[in-house]
Length: 122
Length: 497
Figure 1 (tube, chains in turn brown, orange):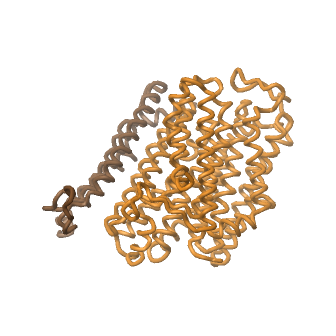
Figure 2 (cartoon, rainbow over the protein chains, first blue to last red):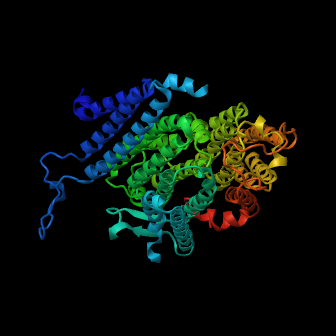
Figure 3 (cartoon, rainbow over the protein chains, first blue to last red):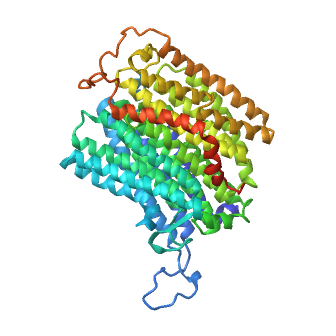
């Protein structure tokens, strides 16, 4: 029980991740697949942010001339910075994906993957 | 200027990628010059960094002057040097090759196409040059995103192939990122060299085991390791023929490089990595056989080549899994021999599709109409099968030596069987090209209008890269001994000299 309650946030992230993978694997609609992909990347982002979280820590900003002091008193900014990049990557991926979905729909008039594959083989 | 070379390898194509869509609207000549100059700068940077690393040791470049482990560093050691040189060289050859295929397009479209092309190259070069695991993720996504969009240039089937590749590829990137997250949680570092030191004492901790599994799965998808190769046949065979040689030739190899770099230079074999390598070995062996069998079943030449890539990437993964000096040399040599041979074969496929010959049956009698392309096809096929003196023979020989040295007889048997299977499907193609009569008896008409060539079988900018890669296969085979002793020996994870 403690293993679950002590790391509840990580368990929830794991659930989110699995939901995303499920959607990616078992949804037939391409738009839903893209949304599932976003769920997966959100779960990863949440995972990193939880790693960088520290209760009662100060923001890692040092005014000019002030010496740092204890590093333990400050939050680690790196995971947040990394996730800023990961969010940008996610936005770019979604953008490219949506553009492709638009072109697929214009040609095949459907977004169901099984029907598109049928149309492709003809 | 010279001290900036490691950065220029990546920055030159990246800057050009941003400028090309603008200049393409003004003047195509200027655009082509700009692309060529940026690719030349990048290749020069790669070659001189390689030279430096052989003489002085690895070239460390700190971005913004921040030393690692805080800042991002580029590390060009002999291993990164030879792979960046390979990618840079491919970049130039495939650029020339792709020009005729875009002949009918508007300047605006050409601009976007080459912008994506340069982004793909910048991403691939960045993956190799960087010494930071998160930076590697960013470049992995840059190259993949550019590849998805480039594949979507291949008509309405290409868009679907590109989108399906996007779904799988992004999931793979996320798995890799999660793996990085676990290593970061344990070590607090992202720098490869620093991680290598910190992880040495943590090899059997549970987060590290999970991280290795996630990273290998992520990169395994990107390099089409069995059974994660589902995206590959469509992506390779439906991408526009102008860039297929680049995508099929070097993209998978760069992911294989990343796997090799992380497993042998960051995590280092021992503890859980050895078990993961065992699994990778069996999957690779299965992929070698399945890829070959599927290739035999294909009717279309490009699709046959794509399935053959599944099998050949299996060779590379198998060498990584065996993990002794001979097998790793074989893996590195196979990265080169297969990149050159498969790039060359996709150019042959592109040359065929130029004249509307896509299916193997349509290639009947091609030797009369296209003697030079057909001769190159012979050389490349022999290399794929693994007959001397082509490059493919020597890389397979090293892999076989590695398997025997380790006592893994099953791997050795699989390597031999797969060569026979490869022979079946390539000799079937050669039979059509050389022995069967062409019903049309001539080149016929080009697949699209406006493709007249005044007596040549192809435009020189397509023919010359094809022939150069064909010669490259022979050169790599004939001079494999100096290549291994002078370059690959220094790319192994431990000193053997």
